[in-house]
Amino acid sequence: MIVKQAANVLDILEYFARIRRPATLSEIAQEFGWPRSSTFNMVGTLVERGFLYEPRPRAGYYPTPRWLVLSRAVAEAEPLPPSLHRLLLDLAKDTGETVHVAAPAGDRVVFLDVVESDSVIRYFAEVGKRLPIHATATGRAILAQYSPSERQSLLAKIKFERYQPSSPMSIAAVEAEIARGLSQGWFQGATEFTPDVLGLAVMLPLAGRPLSLAVAGPTFRMERRMADLGPMMRDAVRAYTANSVR
Image 1: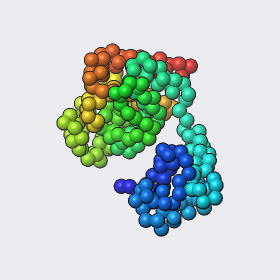
Image 2: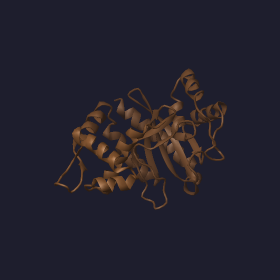
Image 3: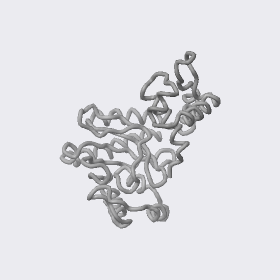
Image 4: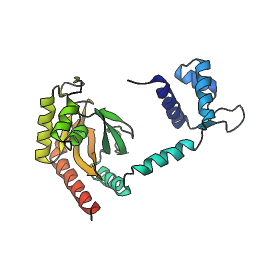
């Protein structure tokens, strides 16, 4: 369930991140199709809380650095080590595909760090992207780190949807994929949620957090390289983990 008022605030922030300039009330209202009165109240509240200001009188509103200050404070409490981003950069270079790190978020996973491929045809991703935890390699690499009882409890709450013809439609199907991933050392998801995209993922336990690291790209490039990419990712994460605990 999405709370409309909260979503509107986030829409405003994303809007400014996209246009990168001040915007007037009229421009904001027109962008989202909001009544001018509602826009005035929303913007007025953000101004009063110190999140928006007018860089020049009557020239429009723009976010203050308060967003950045709060974001930094939050990020510093649960930081990802810089060495992990370097691992993503190395894997993106070696594979030529998009690489990301994800964490659990209920029945979804959320991307915490992303390095996109330089290829014109690639898997597009960004920090904050969310995917079903059961219908992706990324998610199953996280589920594999749960205890059997924790995993069963979560899977029992999932509404299985046929996102694509190959989407898993039962707990048994998800468990079978997890078992296969544990056996070979990496997890595979082929067009189960996103069409024409194949992803490989490995478990990445970090400071007690069940994370996963994944490489994803168009099926026509990825499917012929799985035999090489899976072991490459597995070995890279093993080496990273070993160096991290020294």
